[in-house]
Amino acid sequence: MISDRIRLARRKAGLSLRGLSSHMDGYVTAQAIGKYERGEDTPSSGALIALSKALGVSLAWLLDTQSVELSGVEFRTKASTTARDRARVETEVLEWTDRYLQIEEILDLDSKSWRSPLSKPLCLENIAEAECLAAEVRGRWRLGTGPIPNITGVLEEKGLKVLIVPLPPRVSGFTCLVRRQRGQSGLPVVVVNQHFPLERRRFTLAHELAHRLIVAPNLSGPDQEKAANLFAGAFLIDRTHLLGETGARRHALGYREIVDLKRLYRVSGAALLVRLRQTGIINEPALTYAFQTIARGWRTQEPDELEPPDGRGQQERPRRFERLCYHALAEGLISLSKAAELLRLPVQDVEAGLRGPRWNRVDHRPS
Image (cartoon, rainbow, N blue to C red; front, side, top):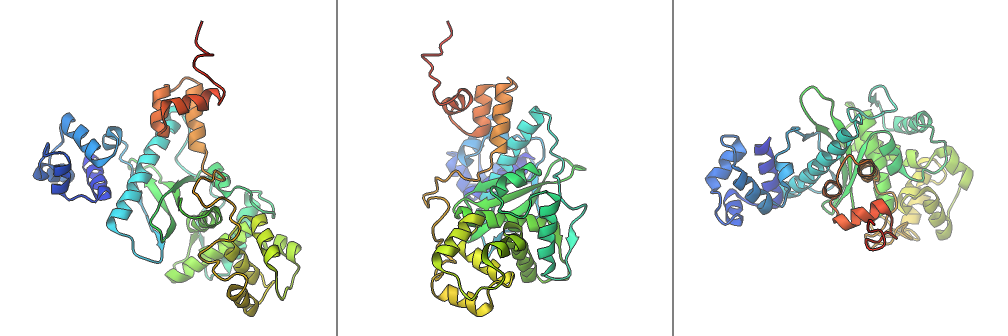
């Protein structure tokens, strides 16, 4: 509803009712905006345009009729998040989901459910069961026991919507359901922090997958997180495969070997060391010693990162939405300007994406 969209966008912008009115140069009073948010009045077309500009959101998003909303949002964080942070992220997810649903509707694709490997979420009785679940999911998805080169692609292939956006510094990610009209099943969305290294983003994706597959009413909140972490480690680093690489029992590992293994499995150095302990390859004193010596500081600073730490890495970014947009564009189902609107890219960039990097307007002018 328009009322919900206006209220969420205002919270995202961190504005009071009076502050928003001021940003609109008094075009609409604070009292009128309050009525819009409570559903007591409907803004005129001029007021909607002014609101979209002041709030930094599209007019189409404010006018959305699909009644898309988020449910079950739970930030994975050690620190509280502000209302403004939450509103900003939720608005970003809703805007992106709107565009995703638009292109799937244009291509007549089914978005109602994802292809879960389980008929229903598994009820865990203890943390250790997460290890067996990870092996079962790998088996059902026919992933084998080796490293998973692209977990983002795997999850997208199975119907999960994956979004990488800037999140508050202490938030690794979250999973939620995007609900549409009443009676329709929720669409599962996994959101991860763009500011984190690829190694941590991959672990977060596996962790959030666990939250889609596991229910554990008998476990405390912290134990549920431990179970999700165990699942993530086991899903990314299969026990049998790791034993084949390192041997069944090790007293210590050198820096180069650890770095080579973390790059093989595409996980963080800290996650690899913890996995070595989980599998019994090293004992607790060896793990503690590693974090005190060669791995000191690895929990906050990643050694030998898979991507450059400048935020320009292109590995494992979600590609399905972009691919669907170019599919519709190539088939003439949407215009170039519509594709640019959906992709949030300049028209010339989208045109180059359609025709190729060597395309030139002058050389390809119609005769």
